[in-house]
Amino acid sequence: MDGKAELRVEISLGLESFCADDPEVARLREEAANRPAGVRRLLEKRVEKAKKGIVDRAADDYYPDWRARLARHCAQIEEYRRPLTDPGLVPVLTMACLTDRVDIPTVGAVLTSIREAEPAVTIRFLGPWPAYSFTDMEIGASRPSGT
Image: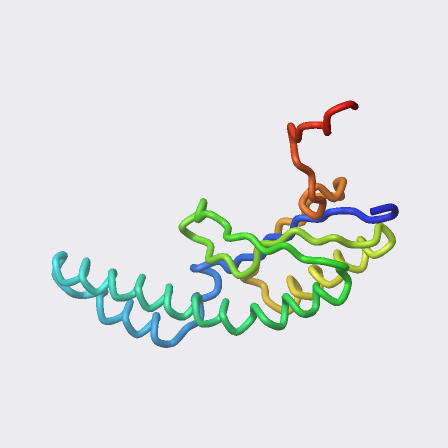
């Protein structure tokens, strides 16, 4: 593990910002605008469902490319399921990366290029830390007798 570091990368898409210019969402919102309150609530639920579907499909499309781009600069990856902490974000990729310390700026540059290509993306880039996620340690393991 000499010369290695662990990084945490979390990439999400913003529901509102990703769907801001979507024609289907705009059509549904326009349809709801002049309706009675009960109908408007039902149509607003359809808008939310449509936005979620749009962003979920985009996340599925982005995932393999973004993962592969990051993996090129990592010796090992450990993926996690990120708990939904912000209902306005749809997680795309959450992972710990084992990388050479000299490659940390390169991983940052990949994340910057992702952010520049997709303005609706939210990125958390944490670390570097010791490579705890990539070590196999048994805490409290008993010692062989006689030691």
